[in-house]
Image 1: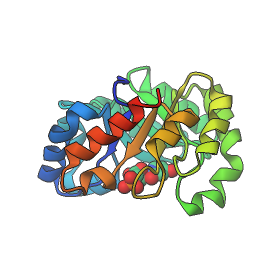
Image 2: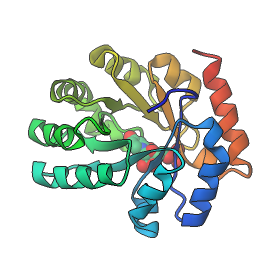
Image 3: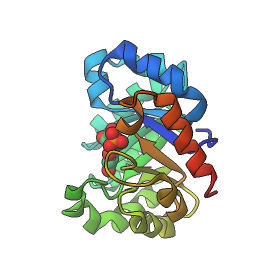
Length: 215
Ligand code: 3DU
């Protein structure tokens, strides 16, 4: 996945044509688009193929299952052209290894550590460092850490070396792009602040500009 602007668009817009139009509009200012269940459930999995023709696609299915099911999901995403798949780490070493093996080096496997919303503190925060260490052992290429708590990004960075950190929670959830990048994130993930804006391209550009001032 390229690293030019540091911005990943979380495309939770559920109207397929609007979603594609937004991606085309903001594409000069994003490194990738992250899609989640809202868009895939309304538009179908072909959306992975379609978007992959425009930019790198991260499938944020937060896969959390037994190794065989994890393998089937990751293989499907990879066959559709996904550049990365997000999986939960709490499922343990066998499921994590199944994800990495299924990706076969063709897509990144990104493991969730601590989630960015307030409820993320209840369970995920308490085990975030353990999950990061497990991800490293199992060969994960990157990690999700919260832009809403930049100090937690720094804690994950200290464990994972030069593997990638992607940080959601910028904008609508209250986190700041520059604080996340300064704390050690490689990319920020931004959804509503961009796709719900009157001028998504201008917002994406301003976040890319903000990131450029701190790197
Ligand atoms: O809050 P936003 O609209 O910027 O969207 C954030 C996206 O990132 C959304 O797709 C959500 O499912 C995802 N995400 C988190 O917000 C927090 C996490 O810990 C993991 C993923």
